[in-house]
Length: 69
Image (cartoon, rainbow, N blue to C red; front, side, top):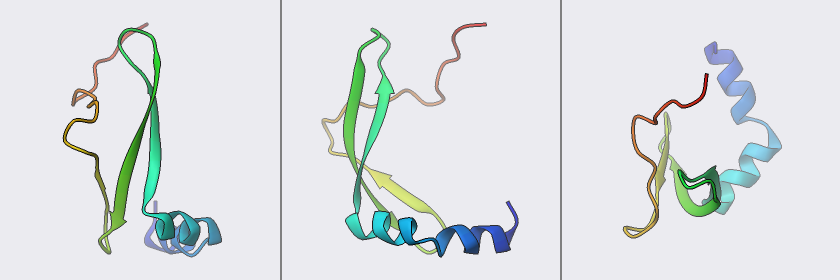
């Protein structure tokens, strides 16, 4: 993405709404096949979105494993 594209995305009204909340939900499918939703706090530091969860929240492995074909 070019810098002018980033500025355009950051200026969208939905961006303002999402960043004002400071909390979102990460939805994923766990290795046992169940669906999970984890609340995640986030903040924009001026160049990156920083994510954090509680210490006891489920974590995904990094790097994520690749399954399937």
